[in-house]
Length: 346
Ligand SMILES: NC(=O)c1ccc[n+]([C@@H]2O[C@H](COP(=O)([O-])OP(=O)(O)OC[C@H]3O[C@@H](n4cnc5c(N)ncnc54)[C@H](OP(=O)(O)O)[C@@H]3O)[C@@H](O)[C@H]2O)c1
Image (cartoon, rainbow, N blue to C red; front, side, top):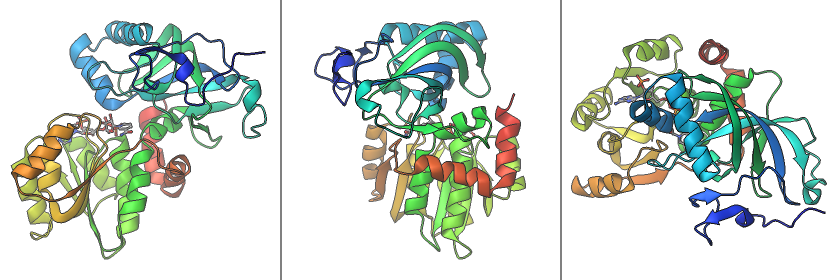
Protein backbone atom coordinates (compact mmCIF):
# COMPACT_ATOMS: atom_id res chain seq x y z
CA UNK A 1 0.00 0.00 0.00
CA UNK A 2 1.34 3.39 -0.95
CA UNK A 3 1.10 6.48 1.21
CA UNK A 4 -1.95 8.71 0.71
CA UNK A 5 -1.20 11.92 -1.13
CA UNK A 6 -3.02 15.26 -1.25
CA UNK A 7 -4.66 16.01 -4.67
CA UNK A 8 -2.73 19.30 -4.91
CA UNK A 9 0.60 17.70 -3.99
CA UNK A 10 0.91 19.37 -0.57
CA UNK A 11 2.57 16.22 0.79
CA UNK A 12 5.63 16.96 -1.39
CA UNK A 13 6.23 20.50 -0.15
CA UNK A 14 9.40 20.78 1.96
CA UNK A 15 9.66 24.53 2.39
CA UNK A 16 7.94 26.77 3.17
CA UNK A 17 5.35 24.51 4.77
CA UNK A 18 1.79 25.49 3.87
CA UNK A 19 2.65 26.69 0.38
CA UNK A 20 1.54 24.92 -2.77
CA UNK A 21 4.18 23.03 -4.79
CA UNK A 22 4.40 25.73 -7.48
CA UNK A 23 5.13 28.50 -4.98
CA UNK A 24 7.33 26.33 -2.74
CA UNK A 25 11.06 26.93 -2.70
CA UNK A 26 11.73 23.21 -2.39
CA UNK A 27 9.71 20.05 -3.04
CA UNK A 28 10.43 16.39 -2.32
CA UNK A 29 11.51 14.79 -5.61
CA UNK A 30 11.88 11.22 -4.28
CA UNK A 31 10.79 8.99 -7.17
CA UNK A 32 8.59 6.79 -4.96
CA UNK A 33 5.01 7.70 -5.70
CA UNK A 34 2.05 8.23 -3.38
CA UNK A 35 -1.28 6.53 -4.13
CA UNK A 36 -2.54 9.45 -6.28
CA UNK A 37 0.56 10.23 -8.36
CA UNK A 38 2.00 9.22 -11.71
CA UNK A 39 5.72 8.55 -12.11
CA UNK A 40 7.38 9.43 -15.40
CA UNK A 41 10.75 8.41 -16.76
CA UNK A 42 11.83 11.74 -18.17
CA UNK A 43 13.33 12.06 -21.65
CA UNK A 44 13.56 15.78 -22.29
CA UNK A 45 12.90 19.10 -20.58
CA UNK A 46 11.81 22.19 -22.46
CA UNK A 47 13.10 25.09 -20.39
CA UNK A 48 10.92 28.13 -20.94
CA UNK A 49 12.49 30.63 -23.32
CA UNK A 50 12.85 33.63 -20.97
CA UNK A 51 14.57 31.44 -18.36
CA UNK A 52 16.94 29.71 -20.80
CA UNK A 53 17.95 33.08 -22.25
CA UNK A 54 18.62 34.38 -18.74
CA UNK A 55 20.75 31.31 -17.91
CA UNK A 56 22.77 31.78 -21.10
CA UNK A 57 23.50 35.37 -20.09
CA UNK A 58 24.26 34.58 -16.44
CA UNK A 59 25.98 31.17 -16.57
CA UNK A 60 27.50 31.34 -20.05
CA UNK A 61 26.26 29.74 -23.23
CA UNK A 62 28.50 26.64 -23.26
CA UNK A 63 26.79 23.25 -22.91
CA UNK A 64 28.79 22.49 -19.73
CA UNK A 65 27.89 25.72 -17.98
CA UNK A 66 24.22 25.42 -18.92
CA UNK A 67 24.15 21.78 -17.74
CA UNK A 68 25.71 22.85 -14.44
CA UNK A 69 23.22 25.69 -13.98
CA UNK A 70 20.18 23.52 -14.78
CA UNK A 71 21.41 20.65 -12.51
CA UNK A 72 22.10 23.08 -9.69
CA UNK A 73 18.58 24.54 -9.75
CA UNK A 74 16.95 21.10 -9.82
CA UNK A 75 19.18 19.75 -7.03
CA UNK A 76 18.45 22.76 -4.82
CA UNK A 77 14.69 22.92 -5.38
CA UNK A 78 13.61 19.39 -6.35
CA UNK A 79 12.05 20.97 -9.47
CA UNK A 80 13.11 23.37 -12.23
CA UNK A 81 12.20 26.91 -11.28
CA UNK A 82 14.22 29.86 -12.49
CA UNK A 83 15.43 31.54 -9.29
CA UNK A 84 15.10 35.04 -10.77
CA UNK A 85 12.11 34.88 -13.12
CA UNK A 86 10.24 32.13 -11.28
CA UNK A 87 9.40 30.43 -14.60
CA UNK A 88 9.91 26.79 -15.58
CA UNK A 89 8.89 24.95 -18.75
CA UNK A 90 7.57 21.44 -19.25
CA UNK A 91 8.79 17.94 -20.04
CA UNK A 92 8.16 14.77 -22.00
CA UNK A 93 8.48 11.33 -20.45
CA UNK A 94 7.00 7.86 -20.44
CA UNK A 95 4.63 6.58 -17.76
CA UNK A 96 6.56 4.28 -15.41
CA UNK A 97 4.02 3.81 -12.61
CA UNK A 98 0.45 4.88 -11.79
CA UNK A 99 -0.74 5.18 -8.17
CA UNK A 100 -3.58 2.82 -7.22
CA UNK A 101 -6.04 5.67 -6.70
CA UNK A 102 -5.59 6.69 -10.36
CA UNK A 103 -5.58 3.27 -11.98
CA UNK A 104 -9.26 3.76 -12.91
CA UNK A 105 -8.20 6.51 -15.33
CA UNK A 106 -8.56 4.83 -18.68
CA UNK A 107 -6.68 7.49 -20.64
CA UNK A 108 -3.21 6.41 -19.52
CA UNK A 109 -1.17 3.20 -19.43
CA UNK A 110 2.37 2.24 -18.46
CA UNK A 111 4.73 3.09 -21.32
CA UNK A 112 2.60 5.94 -22.75
CA UNK A 113 4.61 8.98 -23.81
CA UNK A 114 3.17 12.20 -22.43
CA UNK A 115 3.96 15.89 -22.22
CA UNK A 116 3.26 17.49 -18.87
CA UNK A 117 0.91 20.45 -19.13
CA UNK A 118 1.71 21.72 -15.66
CA UNK A 119 4.75 23.90 -15.32
CA UNK A 120 8.11 22.42 -14.32
CA UNK A 121 7.86 24.85 -11.40
CA UNK A 122 5.17 22.57 -9.94
CA UNK A 123 6.64 19.20 -10.99
CA UNK A 124 8.87 17.21 -8.61
CA UNK A 125 11.87 16.30 -10.74
CA UNK A 126 15.04 14.32 -10.17
CA UNK A 127 17.76 14.36 -12.81
CA UNK A 128 20.45 11.68 -12.63
CA UNK A 129 22.27 12.84 -15.71
CA UNK A 130 22.06 15.52 -18.38
CA UNK A 131 22.66 13.72 -21.68
CA UNK A 132 22.66 16.64 -24.11
CA UNK A 133 21.45 20.19 -24.50
CA UNK A 134 20.13 21.75 -27.66
CA UNK A 135 21.08 25.36 -26.97
CA UNK A 136 19.17 26.68 -29.97
CA UNK A 137 15.84 25.16 -28.92
CA UNK A 138 16.03 25.28 -25.08
CA UNK A 139 15.63 21.46 -24.91
CA UNK A 140 17.59 19.44 -22.34
CA UNK A 141 17.77 15.63 -22.76
CA UNK A 142 18.07 13.87 -19.42
CA UNK A 143 17.88 10.62 -17.51
CA UNK A 144 15.56 11.23 -14.60
CA UNK A 145 12.12 10.91 -13.05
CA UNK A 146 9.22 13.27 -12.49
CA UNK A 147 5.95 13.12 -10.60
CA UNK A 148 2.51 14.24 -11.80
CA UNK A 149 0.01 15.04 -9.04
CA UNK A 150 -3.64 13.97 -9.03
CA UNK A 151 -4.73 17.42 -10.26
CA UNK A 152 -1.82 17.58 -12.74
CA UNK A 153 -2.41 17.84 -16.48
CA UNK A 154 -0.74 15.98 -19.31
CA UNK A 155 -1.24 15.31 -23.01
CA UNK A 156 -0.42 12.20 -24.94
CA UNK A 157 2.25 12.93 -27.55
CA UNK A 158 0.60 12.48 -30.97
CA UNK A 159 2.06 9.89 -33.35
CA UNK A 160 1.94 12.17 -36.37
CA UNK A 161 4.26 14.90 -35.01
CA UNK A 162 7.97 14.70 -34.11
CA UNK A 163 8.58 14.60 -30.35
CA UNK A 164 10.75 17.74 -30.37
CA UNK A 165 8.05 19.73 -32.17
CA UNK A 166 5.30 18.53 -29.82
CA UNK A 167 7.43 19.43 -26.83
CA UNK A 168 8.23 22.89 -28.17
CA UNK A 169 4.65 23.81 -28.96
CA UNK A 170 3.16 22.29 -25.80
CA UNK A 171 5.26 24.67 -23.70
CA UNK A 172 3.44 27.64 -25.20
CA UNK A 173 0.01 26.10 -25.92
CA UNK A 174 -1.79 28.54 -23.60
CA UNK A 175 -0.95 31.47 -25.89
CA UNK A 176 -2.72 30.48 -29.14
CA UNK A 177 -5.59 29.05 -27.10
CA UNK A 178 -6.18 32.45 -25.49
CA UNK A 179 -5.97 34.09 -28.94
CA UNK A 180 -8.64 31.68 -30.17
CA UNK A 181 -10.93 32.81 -27.34
CA UNK A 182 -10.22 36.53 -27.63
CA UNK A 183 -9.61 37.71 -31.20
CA UNK A 184 -12.88 38.51 -32.95
CA UNK A 185 -13.74 38.93 -36.65
CA UNK A 186 -12.61 42.33 -37.91
CA UNK A 187 -10.08 42.86 -35.09
CA UNK A 188 -6.61 44.23 -35.54
CA UNK A 189 -4.37 41.75 -33.71
CA UNK A 190 -0.75 42.58 -32.92
CA UNK A 191 1.68 39.81 -32.04
CA UNK A 192 4.87 41.06 -30.39
CA UNK A 193 7.61 38.43 -30.75
CA UNK A 194 7.86 35.92 -33.57
CA UNK A 195 9.19 32.88 -31.72
CA UNK A 196 7.35 29.61 -31.03
CA UNK A 197 4.37 31.19 -29.33
CA UNK A 198 4.39 34.13 -31.74
CA UNK A 199 4.10 31.98 -34.86
CA UNK A 200 1.27 29.89 -33.40
CA UNK A 201 -0.54 33.04 -32.24
CA UNK A 202 -0.17 34.67 -35.65
CA UNK A 203 -1.80 31.70 -37.35
CA UNK A 204 -4.68 31.66 -34.89
CA UNK A 205 -5.11 35.46 -34.82
CA UNK A 206 -5.28 35.68 -38.60
CA UNK A 207 -7.84 32.92 -38.71
CA UNK A 208 -10.02 34.52 -36.00
CA UNK A 209 -9.71 38.12 -37.27
CA UNK A 210 -10.77 36.95 -40.73
CA UNK A 211 -10.62 38.82 -44.00
CA UNK A 212 -12.05 42.02 -42.45
CA UNK A 213 -9.37 42.05 -39.75
CA UNK A 214 -5.66 42.70 -39.76
CA UNK A 215 -2.77 40.78 -38.23
CA UNK A 216 0.50 42.54 -37.47
CA UNK A 217 3.76 40.89 -36.39
CA UNK A 218 6.49 42.86 -34.57
CA UNK A 219 9.79 41.04 -34.26
CA UNK A 220 13.42 41.91 -33.54
CA UNK A 221 15.21 39.54 -35.88
CA UNK A 222 15.25 40.54 -39.56
CA UNK A 223 15.61 36.89 -40.53
CA UNK A 224 12.53 35.90 -38.55
CA UNK A 225 10.61 38.80 -40.13
CA UNK A 226 11.41 37.38 -43.56
CA UNK A 227 10.36 33.92 -42.39
CA UNK A 228 7.02 35.24 -41.10
CA UNK A 229 6.46 36.89 -44.47
CA UNK A 230 7.38 33.71 -46.34
CA UNK A 231 4.98 31.71 -44.16
CA UNK A 232 2.27 34.30 -44.92
CA UNK A 233 1.33 34.54 -41.25
CA UNK A 234 0.66 38.29 -41.06
CA UNK A 235 -0.73 41.15 -43.14
CA UNK A 236 2.04 43.45 -41.89
CA UNK A 237 5.48 42.42 -40.58
CA UNK A 238 7.49 45.05 -38.71
CA UNK A 239 11.13 44.75 -37.73
CA UNK A 240 11.05 46.40 -34.29
CA UNK A 241 12.77 46.34 -30.93
CA UNK A 242 9.86 46.17 -28.49
CA UNK A 243 11.94 47.52 -25.64
CA UNK A 244 11.62 50.87 -27.50
CA UNK A 245 7.99 51.77 -26.79
CA UNK A 246 7.73 55.00 -28.76
CA UNK A 247 9.17 53.42 -31.93
CA UNK A 248 6.62 50.63 -31.61
CA UNK A 249 3.73 53.01 -30.95
CA UNK A 250 4.61 55.07 -34.04
CA UNK A 251 5.05 52.02 -36.26
CA UNK A 252 1.71 50.54 -35.18
CA UNK A 253 0.01 53.89 -35.60
CA UNK A 254 1.29 54.04 -39.17
CA UNK A 255 0.31 50.42 -39.89
CA UNK A 256 -3.23 50.97 -38.59
CA UNK A 257 -3.81 54.55 -39.82
CA UNK A 258 -3.86 55.67 -36.21
CA UNK A 259 -6.49 53.22 -34.92
CA UNK A 260 -4.02 50.91 -33.06
CA UNK A 261 -4.49 47.26 -32.07
CA UNK A 262 -7.66 45.75 -30.55
CA UNK A 263 -5.77 42.80 -29.09
CA UNK A 264 -2.02 42.74 -28.46
CA UNK A 265 -0.24 39.51 -27.63
CA UNK A 266 3.13 39.88 -25.91
CA UNK A 267 5.21 36.76 -26.59
CA UNK A 268 8.75 38.09 -26.46
CA UNK A 269 11.22 36.55 -24.02
CA UNK A 270 12.79 39.74 -22.66
CA UNK A 271 12.09 42.33 -19.99
CA UNK A 272 10.90 45.91 -20.59
CA UNK A 273 8.38 45.17 -23.32
CA UNK A 274 5.32 46.24 -21.26
CA UNK A 275 5.02 49.82 -22.50
CA UNK A 276 5.37 48.97 -26.20
CA UNK A 277 2.47 46.55 -25.79
CA UNK A 278 0.32 49.10 -23.95
CA UNK A 279 1.04 52.04 -26.27
CA UNK A 280 0.38 49.95 -29.39
CA UNK A 281 -3.12 49.07 -28.18
CA UNK A 282 -6.40 51.01 -28.39
CA UNK A 283 -7.47 52.45 -25.05
CA UNK A 284 -10.53 50.17 -25.30
CA UNK A 285 -8.34 47.23 -26.30
CA UNK A 286 -6.66 44.36 -24.47
CA UNK A 287 -3.03 43.41 -23.89
CA UNK A 288 -2.32 39.75 -23.27
CA UNK A 289 0.98 39.33 -21.42
CA UNK A 290 2.16 35.78 -21.97
CA UNK A 291 5.86 36.66 -21.68
CA UNK A 292 7.15 35.42 -18.32
CA UNK A 293 9.66 38.28 -18.11
CA UNK A 294 6.72 40.71 -17.79
CA UNK A 295 6.67 42.88 -14.68
CA UNK A 296 3.24 43.38 -13.11
CA UNK A 297 4.45 46.66 -11.62
CA UNK A 298 5.81 48.01 -14.90
CA UNK A 299 2.60 47.08 -16.72
CA UNK A 300 0.17 48.38 -14.09
CA UNK A 301 1.95 51.61 -13.19
CA UNK A 302 3.17 52.17 -16.74
CA UNK A 303 -0.39 52.02 -18.12
CA UNK A 304 -1.51 54.44 -15.43
CA UNK A 305 1.35 56.84 -16.18
CA UNK A 306 0.27 57.24 -19.82
CA UNK A 307 -3.46 57.27 -19.06
CA UNK A 308 -4.13 54.04 -20.94
CA UNK A 309 -7.15 52.16 -19.50
CA UNK A 310 -6.37 49.02 -21.51
CA UNK A 311 -7.52 45.70 -20.16
CA UNK A 312 -4.58 43.48 -19.28
CA UNK A 313 -4.55 39.70 -19.16
CA UNK A 314 -1.94 37.52 -17.51
CA UNK A 315 -1.09 34.50 -19.66
CA UNK A 316 -2.43 31.47 -17.86
CA UNK A 317 -0.37 28.44 -18.94
CA UNK A 318 -3.56 26.39 -18.95
CA UNK A 319 -6.56 27.02 -21.14
CA UNK A 320 -8.88 24.01 -21.47
CA UNK A 321 -8.32 22.34 -24.85
CA UNK A 322 -5.02 24.16 -25.45
CA UNK A 323 -3.02 21.06 -26.37
CA UNK A 324 -5.52 19.89 -29.00
CA UNK A 325 -5.84 23.43 -30.41
CA UNK A 326 -2.08 23.75 -30.79
CA UNK A 327 -1.67 20.36 -32.46
CA UNK A 328 -4.56 21.34 -34.73
CA UNK A 329 -2.71 24.51 -35.86
CA UNK A 330 0.23 22.39 -37.03
CA UNK A 331 -2.11 20.04 -38.86
CA UNK A 332 -3.98 22.81 -40.65
CA UNK A 333 -0.88 24.87 -41.53
CA UNK A 334 1.51 22.49 -43.32
CA UNK A 335 4.06 25.23 -44.07
CA UNK A 336 4.24 26.22 -40.39
CA UNK A 337 4.60 22.60 -39.38
CA UNK A 338 7.46 22.10 -41.85
CA UNK A 339 9.09 25.26 -40.47
CA UNK A 340 8.88 23.96 -36.88
CA UNK A 341 10.27 20.61 -38.02
CA UNK A 342 13.23 22.34 -39.70
CA UNK A 343 14.10 24.04 -36.40
CA UNK A 344 13.37 21.35 -33.83
CA UNK A 345 13.94 18.03 -35.59
CA UNK A 346 17.70 17.79 -35.12
N1 LIG B 1 2.60 32.33 -19.41
C1 LIG B 1 2.97 31.09 -19.56
O1 LIG B 1 2.36 30.17 -19.03
C2 LIG B 1 4.16 30.76 -20.40
C3 LIG B 1 4.46 29.44 -20.75
C4 LIG B 1 5.55 29.19 -21.58
C5 LIG B 1 6.31 30.26 -22.07
N2 LIG B 1 6.02 31.52 -21.68
C6 LIG B 1 6.81 32.69 -22.13
O2 LIG B 1 6.33 33.10 -23.41
C7 LIG B 1 7.34 33.88 -24.06
C8 LIG B 1 7.52 33.40 -25.49
O3 LIG B 1 8.01 32.06 -25.49
P1 LIG B 1 8.59 31.43 -26.84
O4 LIG B 1 8.91 30.03 -26.50
O5 LIG B 1 7.72 31.75 -28.00
O6 LIG B 1 9.95 32.27 -26.99
P2 LIG B 1 10.94 32.35 -28.23
O7 LIG B 1 10.65 31.22 -29.18
O8 LIG B 1 12.30 32.48 -27.70
O9 LIG B 1 10.49 33.70 -28.94
C9 LIG B 1 10.71 34.98 -28.41
C10 LIG B 1 10.80 35.92 -29.60
O10 LIG B 1 10.87 37.27 -29.13
C11 LIG B 1 11.82 37.96 -29.94
N3 LIG B 1 12.39 39.11 -29.25
C12 LIG B 1 13.31 39.14 -28.24
N4 LIG B 1 13.59 40.39 -27.89
C13 LIG B 1 12.86 41.19 -28.69
C14 LIG B 1 12.73 42.60 -28.81
N5 LIG B 1 13.43 43.43 -28.02
N6 LIG B 1 11.89 43.09 -29.76
C15 LIG B 1 11.18 42.25 -30.56
N7 LIG B 1 11.25 40.91 -30.48
C16 LIG B 1 12.08 40.39 -29.57
C17 LIG B 1 12.89 36.91 -30.16
O11 LIG B 1 13.72 37.33 -31.25
P3 LIG B 1 15.28 36.88 -31.28
O12 LIG B 1 15.25 35.38 -31.44
O13 LIG B 1 15.84 37.59 -32.42
O14 LIG B 1 15.86 37.30 -29.94
C18 LIG B 1 12.04 35.69 -30.47
O15 LIG B 1 11.68 35.61 -31.82
C19 LIG B 1 8.60 33.73 -23.20
O16 LIG B 1 8.72 34.85 -22.34
C20 LIG B 1 8.30 32.48 -22.37
O17 LIG B 1 9.04 32.43 -21.19
C21 LIG B 1 4.95 31.78 -20.89
